[in-house]
Image (cartoon, rainbow, N blue to C red):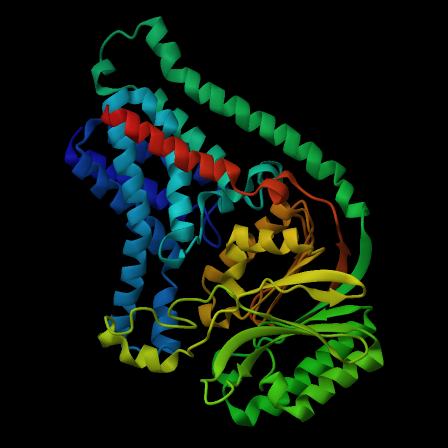
Length: 513
């Protein structure tokens, strides 16, 4: 295979992957996205395979993470070229995982022949696990997230999580790649047995997909958990406050009064539990007695629970430094504080700057970014005798973290975020889809309140029961339920993904022999 053709195939995979996600893509493209790259890998050197995978990854993540430059320039106070440089560094880091995927698949194909391509779904999931955990991880747009809105397929997440969906989707690409005739067959007679061996893996993959789709359709149609548990009316307040307005002292009073007004509207529409977005109060809740009193009084008068995001200062004793947290507070119907959750998984370059000495060229960013500390406890918050959890901002893209809440007793998932940073890009839509996958995995209703959208309610089968548009004020009131049921995934976690890592390592070890 010529170098130009192999590069074109790798580029095609990158484009197809990028177009598998909202807001510009379609989930159908994900099923064939890896096939061009896999066709190219068996006939190249290991070094060439790495470069092809890097090409695929660079296009994949440029198309899905392009919005980071905007965040760095507008809110990090960086020159445009520096913002592009930081965005490029993240893209290269992310692209390294598809590069290692391609390298491993190429090595397996050299050792075992083209049939080794059927191991590529395992290798892909192992690479996604790397993206989740290596160097704090950034598991944005995992392949399985492309199917969040395809409910029959997405139900597989209740068994094996988003990684199981990724493996299923990748298996079709692997089957397609194996059905493609190798160069030795071009223009020559193909024996009947060879033709069968070529098409059998694709047929097997399609049978599995069909089986999952039939089972998933039945599961979503029966939807037994949508009638279980204890119902509650939930109100989500979408203030639609521009990021530059949030930091203007002159706007603080008006912003706060808007939230109180919209909360009263939600209560009039029947909300028994109200959720505000991340960092929604234009003051620190514990340090502003008058503002805190108004929230407590509203909760007490209406007899509702109110969950909201607010920064928290914890002053050290005996000269110890003050600790700064991105927190979520729960105010109970009696006006008292029911609990505080401190964000555990911070955003690099958003809530802290790693490797500050190395990033000397990004000094304005270091000054602009608040130096938050990470919380260390998966705190649950009380609502009407039940326990709920909240994930703050991009914490919700970490499946194991959300599962930790459910294991601890969470009966409802909430997530609060401020996506105003992203602007009208693909990011708010991608973020919502990834949050919705947690509802299917854990068998829980998920309530999402976002400052600029998308806010909404997702049931345990991934059905969106309420949804706002982005960049408009909204008061959403809808029905959710407290549940004590449990999915296979909630009980056993990412066993399939870890098995993929182990099997990949064993195949590589045997290939050396």
